[in-house]
Length: 119
Image (cartoon, rainbow, N blue to C red; front, side, top):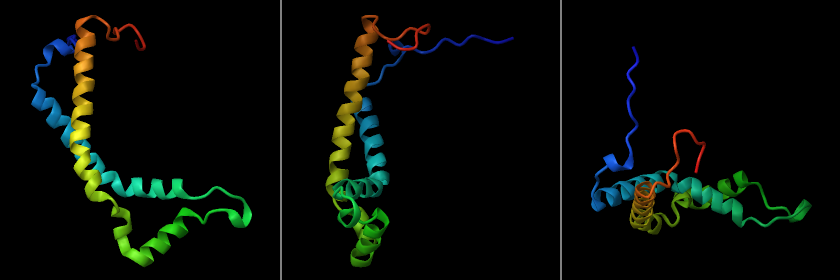
């Protein structure tokens, strides 16, 4: 026999402000710490000029090879410290505000119903 387990609502969650902030901050810090090199590659691609023929930008792989030859793997960590330093507070506040917004919406009955596909 299957037992129906009710889904928890936001009324069941009782986290302190510091717990929300800590959860968001740690998640953001870990995320940026791991993904920063990929973001550097994305930024390099975005900085390339758009052109055709000889005016076309070199492929990203060629740019990476040149930067690696000049700087080693360090080029992937340009701006790492400022990114990491800002990641914790920005992510902490963003996550906390998001969660508090959901709590507020749940209290006034504006969250998605189980029967709906959204709002």
